[in-house]
Image (cartoon, rainbow, N blue to C red; front, side, top):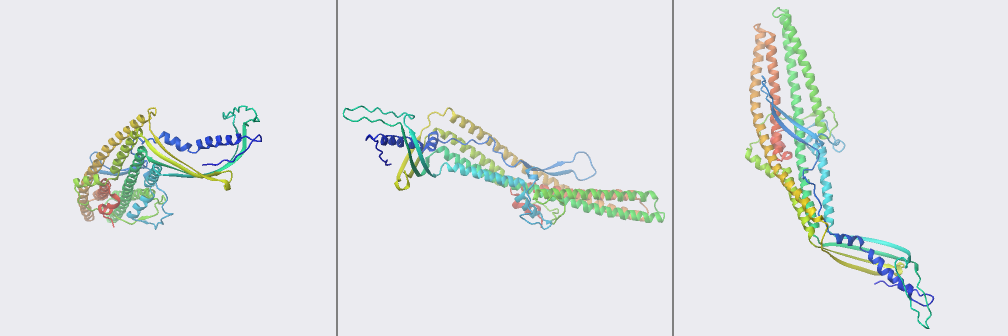
Length: 528
């Protein structure tokens, strides 16, 4: 209870005291819980979800293996590629926080990419945003405590706010008038205010929907790491294959030089004409240009790998791991499908998105139910700290929705549309997971068969080249046949390199398709 000082009019009346009492009983009481009362009267509303649950970093990573059309003398009939697009093709600088020795292993490349590739960086920041949204949704269920202090000095025009006094004239009593202007007066108010939602089903389900969205964001971040492993592993394998092609070209150049020197010696003894020497020289020049082109390709592949892992975009570093041909882990198609359905993070994220949409629909339907909240304040009010007195207010508010102008029905329709869309996306995601596993399994079988054919073809061509060089030395053959045999060896070596690359990419794709690429990378690729 607030005590008011008495101000006596010179005529002896109590009009000023009455005016002050009217003012303090009406104006401050209306302003104490303005915002809280408005919120309580409105009630909670369902938080709308986006129609689609497929959110995340822009871009993606896709490993494909297509057949080379047409007829060819090469045994290489597969064209494997790892397509990286959008945010996954870039990265933040990793050398400032993690020094680089100049030699890059496959494991270090994957670790750097997981930490600094823009695909995972973007998903991690999206996860932080969703976590913040979850905390905001939870705040509607937790107490809100505020404190405020105000110092007021005021003059009140009673006539302006509608206060009128008709003082009757009493015989024998001196007449007096009521002033229309009261003040100036001052008071201070130091107060703590508490609001708490007791029962609000819509706010509760909004929070549960936010929790499912947070779970989906966490799983999407896990899936982004799998995609980064696929992109980085594919780029690393590209560098290995490119360097192997350079080594093969260097060997072919050495062979071409040896044949050229051999024909020059035979020319001196009159065993071969000048045209054979010229053809041998052209072959040397051709191999030199091929070597330059392949070295250029290695530099570009290393720059691409650096871009994925947060290193400076330069080719001035070495890779330290080799990933030779090795059989894939003994996993059947049925086991791979079962593991993928149990482990794929993007599938689990789609399931969490469906649950979030279900909670959001429930929250929209709960807008029809009453909600209960309480609010209270306690503080000191008076003309100065020495005269301040404690006052309090306690309010319980039950809000019963009667008519919201169709808002509830609109929220229900919107939430139901999002739920239907996300259920369809979940079914599509299940189909996508099975498709990824089956495609990777088929690619693995085709690449393994091609590796075996390439090995046999390489052995045959090498034997043929050795025999033709012996025939050339004996003078029963010419450099044309030797050059053709040499080209066959070069083509067979490239076929073997491409086949091993296709096989490793297929194993990497299967690891991603199963959904455990960061943990199973060593198991599938078997690198040091």
